[in-house]
Amino acid sequence: MGEKPLDMSADRLYALTPRPVCVGGVDNQPMADTVSQPPLFDYEAALRACARGERSALQQLYEQESPRLLGVVQRIVRDVALAEDIVHDAFIRIWNKAGTYDQARGSARGWIFSLTRHLALNAVRNNARHVQMEPDEVGDMEHAAIDGWQEQTDAFDWRVNPGRIEACLEQLEPVRRNCVFHAYVDGYSHQEIAHRLGAPLGTVKAWIRRSLTALRECIG
Amino acid sequence: MNNEPKDPNEALHELAGEYVIGTLSAEDREAVEKRLAVEPELQAAVDYWEARLLHLTDLVEPQMPSPRLWNRIERSLDETSRQAAPVVPARPNSWWESLSLWRGFAAAGMAATLVLGALLLTRLSPEPSPTWLVVLATPQDLSPGWVMQASNRTREIELIPLGVTELPPDKALQLWTKAEGWQAPVSLGLVKPGEPIRIRLDDLPPLQPNQLFELTLEQPTGSPTGLPTGPIQFIGRAAKVI
Image 1 (tube, chains in turn red, cyan):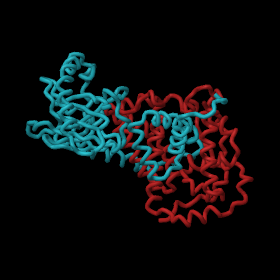
Image 2 (cartoon, rainbow over the protein chains, first blue to last red):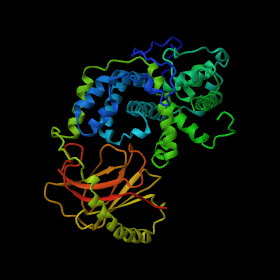
Image 3 (cartoon, rainbow over the protein chains, first blue to last red):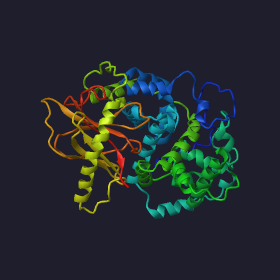
Image 4 (spheres, chains in turn purple, yellow):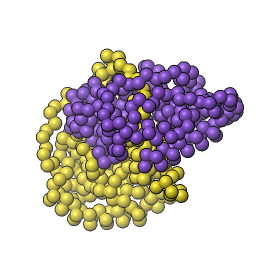
């Protein structure tokens, strides 16, 4: 297996997740996810029940979030069967580790998504480790198709569900914004983003570093 | 805030941010995950980014899992706890909150100090000194039965027996841990009496001061419910070694 195939159709507008309309618009709350969290489902209670050994709670959680979790994972690993394997592993882990969830460290929904996303990221990065590119290949990539990225437009239709993070993303140049999205949403490595945008590897690394710093200054 | 020259935590936040957005290599991810266990500041920075960026998962279209996936999950759960999980016995205000037990442990602390001192002095190996130590003692007469040490580098705990424990036939010792803020204890697996064992702490949050460790008597395959069900054989709290 070679490098994870790059999705060359990534310039299309991504369909947005249908989810409950959020009132309140730009929120003042520190936790960005409280805005997007579908109401009525009590994630904290579900994890508490899992920790007590109530399997019905895990099933409710599965019914509530498995399509979104599978979407997130599949986007990163780009393989339907592998994505289902990872969601399987994620729910086993949620079940076993529910007792370690600590409210002080963040939302329960965030805990579930982070746990699952990192399983997917570990899967693609560990796979890449086994088929690591030779240094000269990376060099070739750096010189590939440099022109064009300066005129980058948004590859992601990200403004529809505004929250704090979106307000801050607005302040980044589109090309840097795309780096953040390609990393977080597509699970691309630095090299893959460089390849995707046709920009030098070092430039991409610097863009991402600076984007993170800018986001943090904006979000506070 | 905008006028601040340079945030001293910037490097930490950069690393945490790159970890969360996912651009780190496998090696770097592994290194971060190891450090998370012992660096609360890094963990806090990761938590920060996880919470802020979570919203971006909305950009992805949901995918319906195949109808078989939930069955597969259930089968895997059944395999790990062979017996159908019965209703978890109601144990309101369980022993975690028992004041008399913890009073007793104040006394056990004395014994523990002696054991720790002896252990540290007799360890001549050039290994890095452990960051955490736990003495697990019997709840009845508070005699120490096991010593546990956790290294900040290896993400491992090492459990060392101080004697041989007699077990009833068809019973096993299961190791559990619970930190403050956790909803329930988490199993670290089965332990053979009289045998030292190393256990990886892969998915656990960083060890915390006063984190509880205990060994309970369970069925040979482990607790059927995923929570301690049998009597406590040994118990102790984590102390940081300076």
